Length: 285
Image (cartoon, rainbow, N blue to C red; front, side):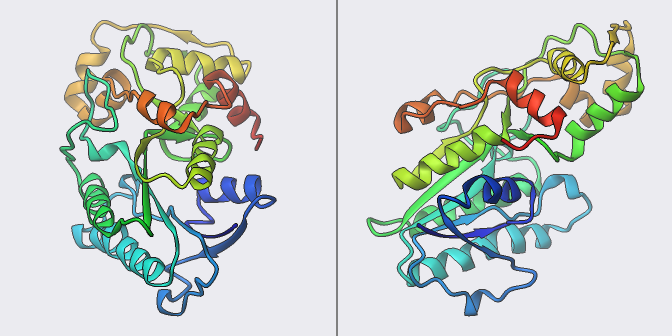
């Protein structure tokens, strides 16, 4: 099967190419280096659009988010549909729902995005779905935080903290957060490609973790002795001084993707413990 893949040099794209080059003929495409007008799509069955301007980049204008996350996605989708491509897969985010919530998000939860990243991803989803018909399948995958070998941003920072600090004030946190190991996400992507199913799908590991549980699993995988304490005023001070950081550490954001698993007859191939161990080992499975 011939595929076009954007974001091929990114975290997810690199993993997907390494793991599935034996199964698919993957043609990378970059909006930075290539021209969509001259993109060769003959005999291509599926386009996978991973590239995006994400919220971690910070400082980007609303116009930049609109251009990358909406305009480029639609430009590529129109090109694909006009040339007989059968499926367009769009990698989205749980940020379309909004921010932290005590209730788990599902595939059908209402969306109230709170930042430019979430708003533009949701807009792209909605516009792409308008292109779907019996000859052009649009598949959308919403992901929580993706982790694995080579991960950057908050997960990488947390691992560095565990490496350097024998004591952390993050004990006894009873929130829940959903994550997805990159091996599970790409297995879901493979399933959606092979079944060519349309709709909105949610990625996620089988269990959610509290911040404390995540730190303990990371420390165990790293074979680091770590003492977690719960200072009485730490959470209050952090909430006042760094509210966004407080939310990520102390509040909940979970997904319930049972509908996705049932509709695709899909099972995650890796447990969270296995995924964390592989990430820490720097192993691509």
